[in-house]
Image (cartoon, rainbow, N blue to C red; front, side):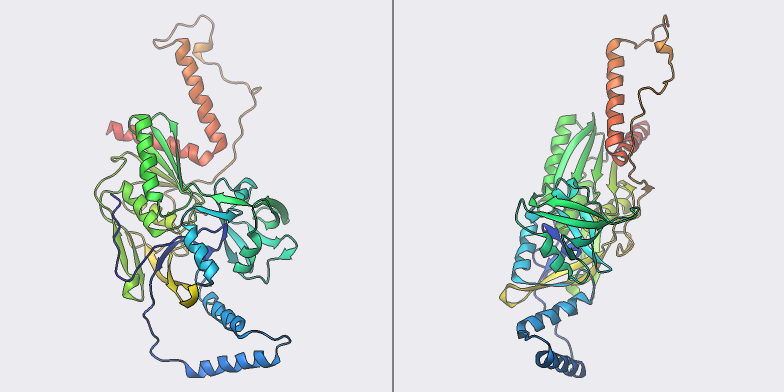
Length: 440
């Protein structure tokens, strides 16, 4: 079921989630040795570079080490390409590898850069950031007393990282708020549970994937089997990919494969042969064709979009929520001497029907914003039904137990609607699809 197809020249597929990570730190990534050599060097441009370099060395107000100037030049080259290409120091490269294991220190945020500010891509479930109410789309404009403007993304990330138990105050700009506001967060060790599950109602399961790690597909299979055993056979499933910023490609392919019997899952296109890959499903559907609803939002990015796009194109699932982030590029890790590396955008990925997700995202089949509901006050006059009239003729199925069971179901449904309206509507749709499927 979970067989992966690889090509020569592509090594370990990596995803990244640091305590606070860069937008370049999630998505589809591969590691290989770079064999490409430019045909000719731009000598005139190199002379200009050398001239600038020497003038800085000679005239800058303070003496600057050669290594610092050259490293800054490398970073500038990569930063000028796109938000996801970057130069990795040995420590950053090491953290990138560790990130796939699902444990790291920090706030629990996925972040990128926008207009000089740190933009929140998604808070990670059950972390200090999510508990503090940080939302996807928030702009962080100040870290304690330090303005973000003027800092590189890596510098901002380094300031947000820190020892467990230490505090940091973020100044946030949020759409819909009239003025910036401050949020104090206590740093913690972040342990990401990639997959979790629960039964929403008898026969209807819920699977939440927070990020795609190296073991996510395997964990999903285990959780699905547990749900099947608990329910005696699932009638339908809600797959929740909201605020999932991505991760390793193999995780996304494996999750898609779990619900598809055949066909293309995703393919990539780049300038070199090694960047042209195709991944297809193997026989078998763990749900055996039972209805599937997928929840997404603007915090769903990269690997999440691969899954949503594949299931949508194959008409295997109905996608509910809001448009996704639109991260449709592949980053390749190119190791350098001394434990350093380049993370370079080398390809775009496409859904089975040929859609590029880059900057467009996945459009849900049913557009549904997350709203906050509140229970109506008990003082609101409720309509009277026949069964409540004194002396009414008894119904064929009327007894105290049945009435109590119905009240319990209504209370649970009302509780879910208040807790998570999108999930409540996804469950309703799932039940409708199950009824329709049974009648057919």
